[in-house]
Image 1 (cartoon, rainbow, N blue to C red):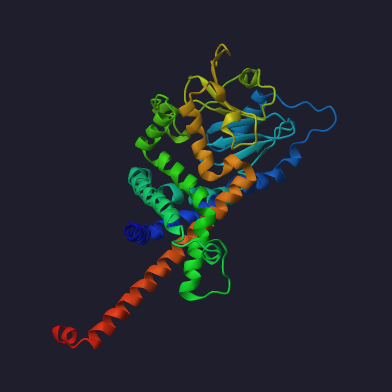
Image 2: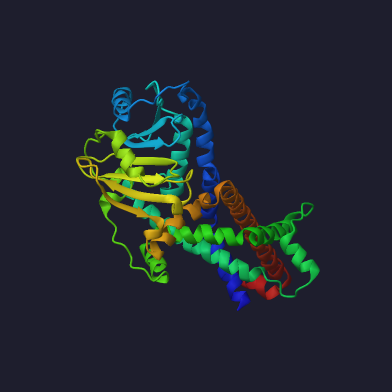
Length: 386
């Protein structure tokens, strides 16, 4: 059985080694996206600090000035609890502008090259950089690769178990040998990388499967004994919420006050500007991001300013709570900086596993060819038949 599992592991590894290397590399580049962008934006924050008894401008006046300064429609507006932090505005072109709360000065686009780099790497990681028409095909390929990679992680964990337990065998499997060369180095590094990264890789790849396949997503809800929610296309990603002009609503200060009412420790509130006269949907966050249990979804009527519904984490079903963690567990953001560091280390481990696995497979192939050649030269019958 172990031999069969080994050949299945080897075959699957050779089949998707290039894809594993591709996804691990792009994933490693995205590991610190949030803290890098946050650090890049900080240089714009100092100019937003008010002096003395300065009072922040009304959001309506701030938005009116921003709409003139920003060249494309505004799709998202983020207001921070700290009045010294600027108002963040995301446009339809996925560029970010920052508006000073006191002077109304609009700066941006903020870090356009850096954001463009991360956007391109994200597109490569999700859809191989293909157009919208090919996203379904790219998702299918990525999902299949994720399933095979999950099999590699699980089967590798079984194959890692030494046939005979000893201090030497365990040491070879968990301690890297920096002085080794050739086959010994590849074998040692492959087993060591698998040992230290198997668990986080299983989480990363498993959550990737859930995001790629509806059946895996439904399985998560069934395991949680929760009904699978029906997806509404209108509530999807920003690019799928419908066409039309995104006009900022009036009485923004009152709207944000209603959205954050009762959330004493809120840190930021993000408004998705509707295309039309629909309800105003907010995400009120009590953290700096990466913690779905500290988020609330709030919907406010733009005419009456009545809160239509407020969905906090505790009010969700068990399946919805589990599903909320999937995306942040996949990127490591759920654990903050250490979770992102673990995701980076795991991605680097996957690169080592891919490279050493291919190297060992090529070495095995070369040895087979040498054996076949030696057999044909030493066996007269084989030489005659050839």
